[in-house]
Length: 109
Image (cartoon, rainbow, N blue to C red):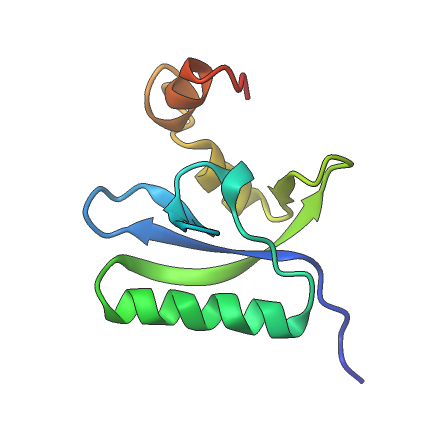
């Protein structure tokens, strides 16, 4: 019996800057909301293959799929706390990193 697949996104670390990035429709994005979402096993396999290709091309490192839940608006939120921390950025200085960047664009997360 095949386990039902929850929606998934592909996460990695940018090789040059070390930021957590998400594979979006136009490449690697720093904003979780721009992540491409896989709704079934075939789409997840396609994301995983794209991530492996970019790891092989030395664009990112440590690319892997992460299960997410979707808000009513379709915004993904990682289910595992580790990925929630990685998506939010540094937890000790909210005036730095992604939190500061996201506040600067009015996201307010």
